[in-house]
Image (cartoon, rainbow, N blue to C red):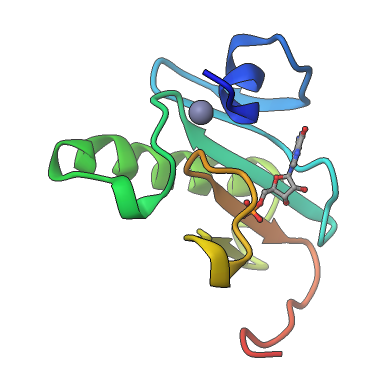
Length: 113
Ligand code: 5GP
Ligand code: ZN
């Protein structure tokens, strides 16, 4: 599978892991857009939410709960943070393996800025 994030999960491409369990992997973004910028991915390869199916509901819930956990572990529980999921061309998605961005550690700009 020629997928960057699948290679990160299997360890053939290095990453700075912050959390892992049976279903989910989380790591630091290589080009942080905020003081805290983490990525949370399912271990199952799903290109984007466009390809997610009802059978993935539990897995996607696990991804969101892992995003909360890594945000809290990074000290963002009280200050707040933002979760972002890009889907397709107009969103700017460049890696086609579902990922949730966890952004925080500063006052974030307005969504339409
Ligand atoms: P997208 O635009 O697809 O939502 O976000 C992809 C994210 O993956 C970007 O924020 C980018 O910096 C990050 N990224 C791309 N390649 C690598 C890599 O090799 N390692 C890590 N840790 N992050 C990466
Ligand atoms: Zn993948």
